[in-house]
Image 1 (cartoon, rainbow, N blue to C red):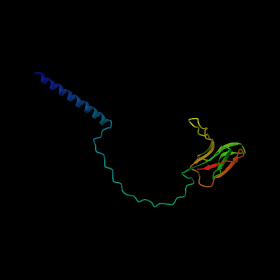
Image 2: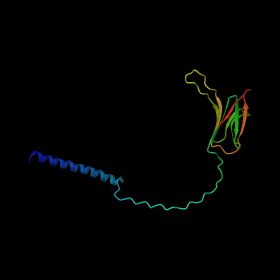
Image 3: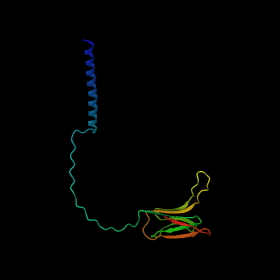
Image 4: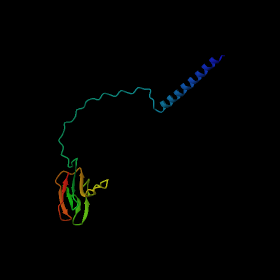
Length: 154
């Protein structure tokens, strides 16, 4: 045999080994459910169904919105919800209460100037509520010192 005929036998051995490896990987994937040989069943075409006519529902007791009250710190305030729950400052007990759902009350600190060239903005009292109950809210403003005050409602 000459030298060229020996090279072809080696090539066939390499090809057969490669096919065996690929076949083994395919068999392993098939057994683990990663490959399916059966065609999937066609999904049935959906049939139209008759929809019920719309009905009138009662309005929601809560609004999908939010609101807030801001004031200078020389006053406190107490917010009363339509159901009688309160959040804010109770003057009688010199304490704070937070009973209105999804609401908060407190003093927010002013924003400082990063450069230090200007004084920070003043602190302010803040009441905020998400998803308030529909109805009329009460607001009691309690003065902590004499002078003017400012309220903002958003």
